[in-house]
Length: 110
Ligand SMILES: [Zn+2]
Image (tube, rainbow, N blue to C red; front, top):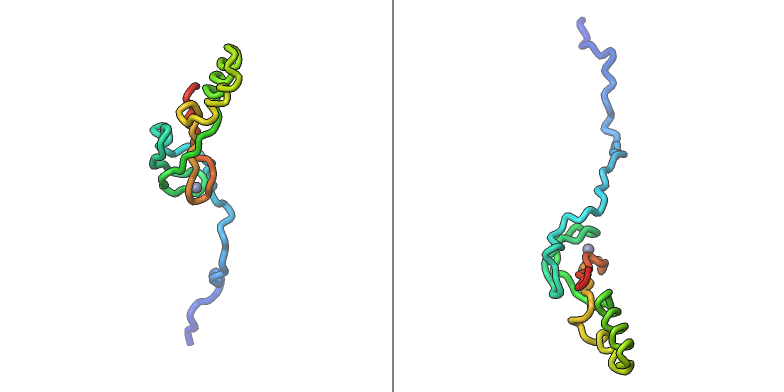
């Protein structure tokens, strides 16, 4: 004669509520990329957040262009392209092997 009290209890029927507030961290440099130089090294990719061994690719930088301009200025027009062929005269781009994006650019002249 005493039914259990049921009034007012309308609990959630386990509807799947996807949280709308997804915290997306901006790609802040959480890396050890300051330690990266002109050889491949370990870094955390800010894009895919994996700790990777970077792939390096030489790319013409300020030093390259300065050497190019200097050689042109002194009349070594034929030799002035050498800085573009010598890796030690170029900046080095560090790429993520996972997502192929640039993680860090090592600049020989800042
Ligand atoms: Zn990546």
